[in-house]
Image (cartoon, rainbow, N blue to C red):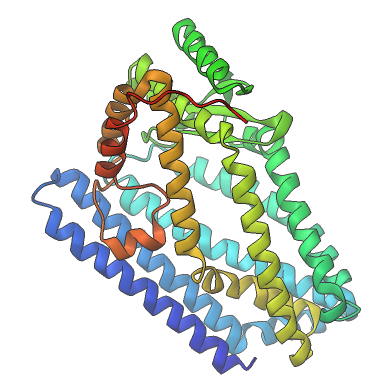
Length: 397
């Protein structure tokens, strides 16, 4: 596990992703004649800035590999830290620095792309307020995770890697449970849906699904963006369906109900627990493989954990197509459920409206889509929805 070998892996991953983004950019340019100019230009600009973000993150990782980790260690040694405290401070420093780089990339994207095309409504003060809140959360949570992880590895990588995997799995579960109630309200305001017709429709969907959808809430997404969307968040008792307030200006009540029906399909098929299980299985495998190499190289806990965190995006490229394929299958199943509830036409209209309003590309390069797209192409979703009208809703096992 030499720095030159790790750097070669990072550069290879970067070149692969840039190649995929280049394919998608050329594909979008060829399709621009069929798409609206605003939508096409917006999609291409997002691709360019996504590629730029990949370059910045890779340069940061390469800098850490070349001299950054050693420099940070010397700085903390000069500050008087040693032993476990030194390893903890080194790991936490890398987490904070990487978060700062990623936040800077987000700032560039919001101000150079989202605002230029009229999608971003966020003011600079609001952006920095969000940044400070996120930094505070990262400092608190990251400090605890870094402390726990470095303690677990004091006995060595072969003995501590499985405890590290359990720590990460527990954190992911707790985060998904606490996020809707404690973290999300720090950034957005939520209120119950006040449309009686929509509430009635959603209640009927929940009864057809045979599940409790949880609270149906509206989020003030319009404070930051004009994009419209909906999502399911939380787990068990903290579960809820969230609609962005911008949806009411894009879709009618029936179409919003269709979107909720789609989200109910995810809940009914237990897609989120299945995705979390697969994610934790893969992350456990990755931690185990990395720990084998780290134990052989006798890496200190802080240095090894920093490398583990920095190299994870490159390792994730190996399984990203599999996860994207799995999630696309989830989306088709959720669409089919909404269609079986009688909302096939409404959902089709909603998908077209949201795709065009959000400036999303209606088609994509097959290789880029294979790796990056968690949602199927619009034409494929519409075709499948056209075949769900005669479906009978199967009994829930």
